[in-house]
Length: 144
Image 1 (cartoon, rainbow, N blue to C red):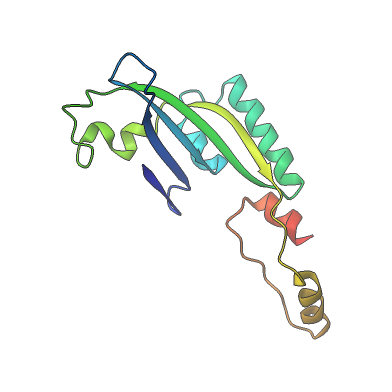
Image 2 (cartoon, rainbow, N blue to C red; image 1 turned 180 degrees about the horizontal axis):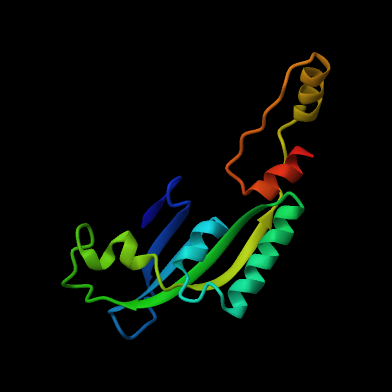
């Protein structure tokens, strides 16, 4: 597993399908921000990718938090590989050449009384700034 980091804005896992007869066949699944996953795709300009990223913009325009999912199949000699230190299983070699699977748009409601609190601050003349890790369009819609 490659844990999520704010630098990569993605998380990736490498798994073996135990039903698969080839013990060296693995699946790579990644999830993350559209800007990160698009850089990992084998064909970021392909029709599937364009459709998914159009969906992401649509979801963000509704104020939804978005995630993009992608995957690929790889072959590794599982018995000979050093999973901790091998260049074959480095982030750079694993998180590339992916195929886009889809995207989600999830409502992430504000905590209770946030609107009332922001209104009170504004009435008191206090400037309010919203900081978010979401894409700009999502943040703008949440702010509205």
